[in-house]
Image (tube, rainbow, N blue to C red; front, side, top):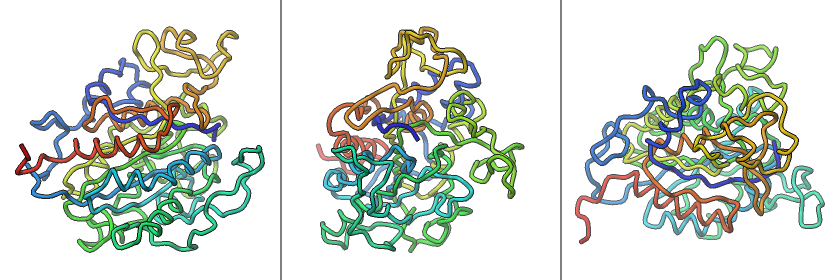
Length: 400
């Protein structure tokens, strides 16, 4: 939807998410409220019902990538799609599988929250530019027209696994600009959703995803924040089935599509993050552990330590430069249109307050890395390994 940049923002403690709430209802759409926060287990991490006290062996890992497929995401998809080696190294020793969905939850999208969306066509795209500024061609010329919806790299040779990984990540840039990654993941992992026949809790133990005893890792990837809004009235708590404008088929969505800024200006109308935390934790009742990571814009903290919120109004002419300076929002409120808060080699990113809050609901401290720095995909792989370790019970026989 906007010019491209991801910032890899990996989780801080749950307390950090709660402390960022100021009491303003709009803030609490961006963070966990006390009522929605998960129970805390004896190790200080969130308590997961049925989680084993210790592990005799490394569990399987089910990895879900939720990828922004709006118009600004060419460089990010290409960079992460080329990071198979780093991901394989991070998950060494695990029996891991991968599924991908996009952030496009528009009712007209036939691939909404559905595993197995075909790769972008290998034709010049006006949304992508090569080194000469000409329309770029996605690296998908060798991709299969129909690939399995879940990647199991175990039986494959490395070259084939790397190609399929790249093809799955390069989902294209024609998706809806009102990104809903939190709703997309929740709907994708629900037995009432489009992937029920691929999910263990819905289809049985032989299903390829949400396997018995597997750890679940969800990575949210996008250069703007989540805009998962609800229907009016709120008759669909998963927020997957509201419709836009005057389209038939259901209750209208709460956020108007007149401007992309509405997702930020009307943050109090979005589905609380805690709803999606609960959905992830309940997706696989036998999971060995659950965690989430984000590749998204950072929280943008001014001097007072509170995350910035953009609100309608006239921007100070001295604050037109991008990325936005904290000095332009001394009270935590940036007036005017939303603006990028970070810039780097791949472009720009907008504040990812809700996505950060989602990651902060799961164990892990000090794991953030910005894509404004070099080699963010490798950083993602490193942090994925650490987050996964923190999400799992300790070994039953730890090595001294």
